[in-house]
Picture 1 (cartoon, rainbow, N blue to C red):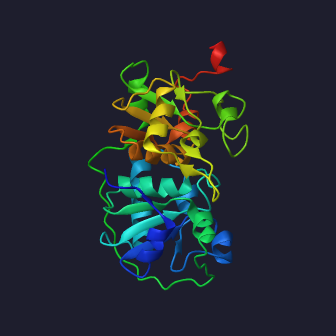
Picture 2 (cartoon, rainbow, N blue to C red):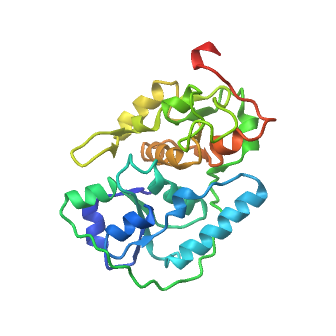
Length: 284
């Protein structure tokens, strides 16, 4: 598998070459300081997708235009970062997943984010770069990674597929519907039959903040809920960000068949024709 993570040292050496660095943080945080040459694209985090054909077309159109405006021409490497791996709900990994889905050939996530970059004493700036916009013509990834709600519905009750919920514990137990507030979505609970690994468990603490665990450690986390290396895994969270963090971790660990239900709980909970499990997991 092609590597997904890039270290601060590797990024520092690559700056000034054929590379586009994308900062996924808020415009205010970006304006305060960012990696030299980085462009700001907070909509990577904020965009709420639906998995209808119209929703997928909107996603492709919007981000093809946004990535082209950032200067991504299909030849330059894209490097995406957030503040640290646990402060943006996986938003840099969401950028990785979107680029991968749209067929971009060379993508990395800055391991440890801006926090790890600054810990090395590397420079930050307030200067905003001049960007030469290009046309980027996206093509959905031939190796399918984006699931629709119909894909997930078809997988319900299948023992050969692991449906993996990686949301925070208050969402898993049905106390809250989302990170945006307890009642942001109309229903609280879980997709029936889902296994649960809170997304934080794919990382471990270091002096410069959380980092993705080693492949063996990630495989051990998977084994704790009965997921083997060869098991197809369908991941969901609230809107595909924390799921993307887990997606990247599982791919780094060598799992060959990992896909994301990008619409996630934000979409599933709003369709009252779709089943959910409510209450505490051990009561259902």
